[in-house]
Length: 303
Length: 188
Image (cartoon, rainbow over all chains, first blue to last red; front, side):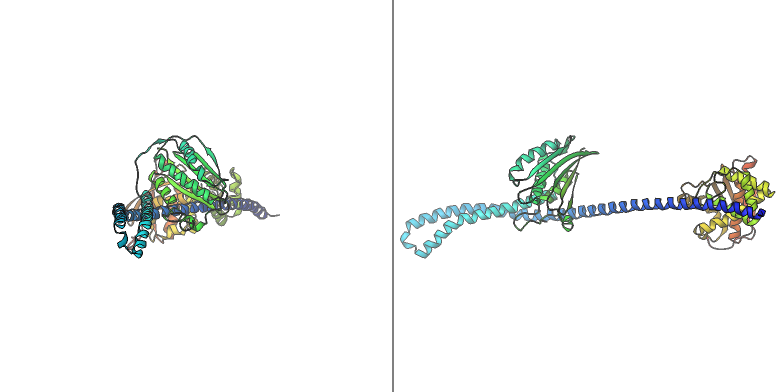
């Protein structure tokens, strides 16, 4: 074997060693690229989710402005209609007393047809006023709820025990729940939270009633948990109901959005809840899986 | 130091002086990978200095000549890998002025572990400049070869004076470069 052959042999061994190392490096780089890709996919999903949340918040803000304007416009005529109907009701009572007296005095001068008509007016009148009152009260309640969704309320805030409020609220609603509904509590010690307790209580009621309505006919388990995350108190209300379809989730906090049959819900409960939590500088979100259940999460800043 | 600098030297020696010369030079040093260099890895700078020393002895060539030759080869290998960094310039002087700033910055983005020398320039006009080189590896002669390789790439004849050198006690090396044929282009 010549010197030249030896030289090439040495070079060949060296190149082979270099090739093996190059293959190892390629493998390492491939693995790095794979992990980076995974990270990118996760980041993208997170960004898309954040974008959806921002769009949702933006849409609800616009709705709040619109609702605020509409409720203001409705409130004025509603006030004078209510006032005039009350006055009219008093006039009607006076008038019916007068008619009754006149009928006694002129019994023989009133024909049968007129007598029947007067009897009908006297009988139906109070019922008509009662229905008008109910209708006006309902309009007033809707307007008031829409205002709560739309407007900022900073009154009556105090450092409060959220866990205590949850326990008190449940005592109020338990009789309205389905017979087999059982509420499980897993409440961690929370620092006091600056909030309007009655408003937060209303949100808890809304979520518990919704969870109960999502449960089977006789009821089902509902779980409420609280915990601290950083400088926030987190409240979860979960049910094991039928779940909410994805296409409905994006509208769930919209005013007047409801999946209940006509007449069974105003569709304001969740939008009012949204308004209250946003007003407290917090966040409310929902996660749901069909056939598995739904979880509403409230995040309230502690400071 | 980036592996491509080692593979570039290996290619130069094998092409110009034969495989035997490269084998013998490697046998003179204590290589961490027995000379099996790849572009993607990094190797100690001290190994490059040992290799240059071994080649000077093996080839019986003065170190300045060897490094000058290597610098020119290295420029063309760098151009092969990163043509976009060079092709954005049409003239030698603006290209050299961008080495210490844009190009080294981009190299650090491409290779976070890249150890690039400090290169600063003073431009007098489009035909004359002073370059300052500073690096703990003191491979100023290689830098000189790189400048000559760049001049060759841009088709420019230059005069290059290494007026101050770290190997002679200066804090940094100073190169004064002029184009032999003045640049009359209106670009850059």
